[in-house]
Length: 128
Image 1 (cartoon, rainbow, N blue to C red):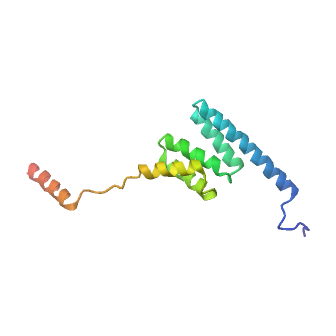
Image 2: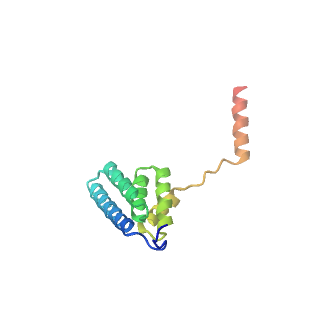
Image 3: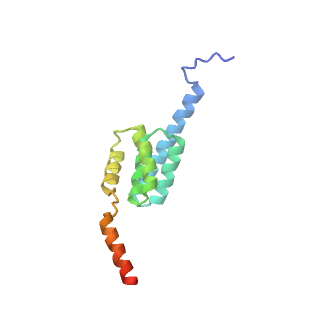
């Protein structure tokens, strides 16, 4: 039976966690550098590495969402945006992405039934 208090993290876990956070931060910084050089594919890979090392930092998810949104990959952007906002609802980049997505969301309204009926009737009359 272990004598470790469940409320305390073991020193080994603490150092691994700190090392993982440090590694993630290095990947994040490299991603920013790659973006400055307009190398988005490498930046995406660096952000994925950062998230793998430390999935609890909203900055990584938010920046990845922004890149995906800028590339027109809306579904991927939404996934990362959701996670960023879950981790930090006040993340500035995530909020900016949220506003962009909301501005793009135009409700798809079907034509009024009478208009559709009229068009269908006209189409059929032309074919007969």
